[in-house]
Image 1 (cartoon, rainbow, N blue to C red):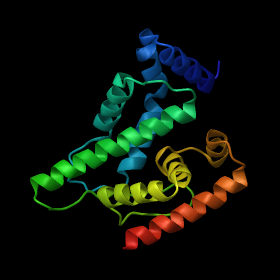
Image 2 (image 1 turned 180 degrees about the vertical axis):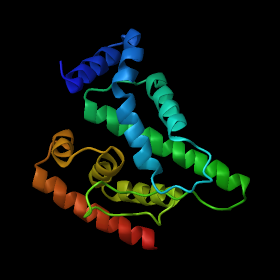
Image 3 (image 1 turned 180 degrees about the horizontal axis):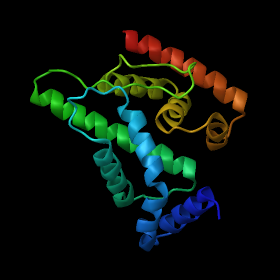
Image 4 (image 1 turned 120 degrees about the vertical axis):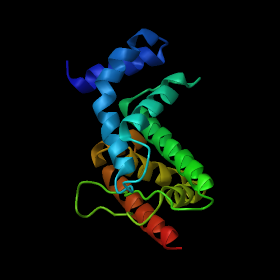
Length: 187
């Protein structure tokens, strides 16, 4: 059985209330969660105290302890994992900023492997979080597309399938959302 199919079945069993699959599920998705964590933490300062493994484990615990922990698809699960990781990083950055009374913020890079993807390396996690929140208030679908693509790491075909739109439509909406984010982050 392919890893994707096995993961999908484990997610379904977990969503149906079978908590006995937690260890097997974590084993099946751990590498992908680490990939997500690395994407979220790319470009961070070396002095940043939160490690990617800690981010993975904290996200995992929040995901499985949620009251409404149901994951109808792999895409949905990774989207939720990405949102949880972003939330953890924002909380961490806020705590650190509060400790330093407005001191240095944590820098993150929003990049994809391809050279034509945006690089938001100058954006800090709090500014990026605020900008995504503003985009979500204006256009929730475009914010979700950004989240799934850059933080969730979905390929464009997987992204189109996840949001139920044609590939070309998703490409155009992602391009528009990325341009909007660049402008929002420039102030």
